[in-house]
Length: 306
Length: 306
Image 1 (tube, one colour):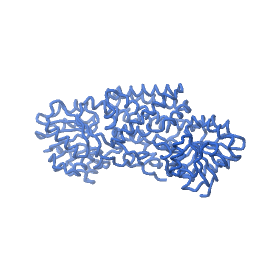
Image 2 (tube, chains in turn purple, cyan):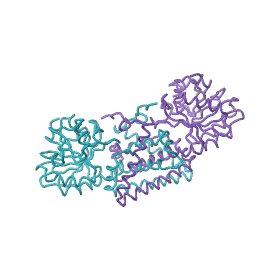
Image 3 (cartoon, helix red, strand yellow):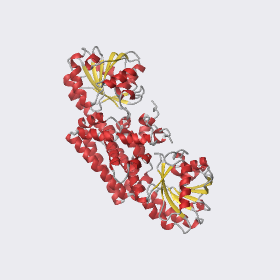
Image 4 (cartoon, one colour):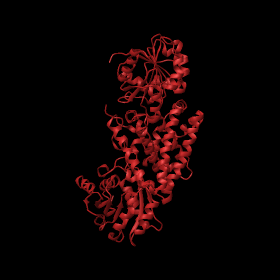
């Protein structure tokens, strides 16, 4: 694959930016990758492990002469970072973000985009429960989907180039409108995370069942929830604050269904429970057939230490 | 390890019984393993893959001269199976079950236990989303916990023998009282399963987000829920019907917490969300330190096909 952007600037050096850097190198998609993170410790680690080609001390310096700028910070920080870098962008540069929410990022970022600079939102639908500069790996995006969310009046050739870039990183791509993006993510990502956090919080808080019991016996189902409930708290706080409406809508639907099942339990309606539990098996099969999860039992977890 | 029961009879030949058979063989814990399942197809598969030493055509025949009888059928079927085998048990035999609920199994089974026959409940806290005779494997119970639930007045030497048997299968064991068992399981297993089923059902049912979108973008969190929501519907129907009170209690706590977080989202209370999401990370660490889950990102899932 040819170099697609001569200089790429990564603002933020966590799981997503770090994995992008490694995948960009793997695909030889950029001439140089420059990185900046607000935390001095993160910058030192990035330097130490050679995560990017050059670590710099400010966002303004990072975007100097950059052809592609990737905003990889929590959604709530996008606007202020954009305001900071705006005066330093070169004409014709492309700014993108990798935030989990799009309408709110559009509202925060687009007013700061200078004339002659392009903005196109993206959202790679991939991640792990780990965070920070050491958590990245080059294959994170392989065969995962990256949602590309262009603003109205986007430059078609820059859109095409960004799509090709994400394909080079390993992703499948799909173009989506911002409000639909936020609704889809409320279903496949935001609400599941909130529910997992809640379930783990409940288990942690019970007086009559000890933490030790919860931990020891977690293989009976609970442990699956603890993985996504170990994700980065700042990122997730911002997601819920900025995708409020869609999340509350899906939570409302969730509660409605949960109450219906709760009522079936209370009334002893075995048929309703059986039918519900049968229907949900089909989606799992679909996910496995689409190559989005493993069919190995228990996610193919390695045996744990004894 | 010496042979602990000369003849073991497995009633039901699904994931748990099949895995027990393979672990019993591995540990040379029994002289002979006899198996019965209600379904002729299951019996044929068990025979074909040599899952047990001898497949027989009735539960009554399976328990002939058996020293240990394992009831490995859905919780709702325990009472009728027990009534059927009771006249055929030899004096001194031990009956156990592997049901996910204990109070209701006690109520259904113990009235049928003949004088001179022992009953002790067990519950191995292990499983996968797969079911049926082909889903078993010998290492399923290794370093998992098996809860041993003795009735009042249990014979101590038979209790000790059964504990040693489960240790030979690979489990850690813990002795527990039936009502506490049912509460602990409502927390670590039953409520998480109901919530996962609900989340998957909601995603399946939305008009404005297609099934294809849910499937393609599931790696953003949702797919984790689909694994346990693919578990056996009959087994889970029975669990909720028979552990009604504890499940409803924990569901009530869950809903209360969920509403508090929902309110924080609505009111934009970022501090409350951040604090909650920080607290839940500790339990994940505890589970990994206790050897009950892998620390590899994404459960160490193998890369999926591209």
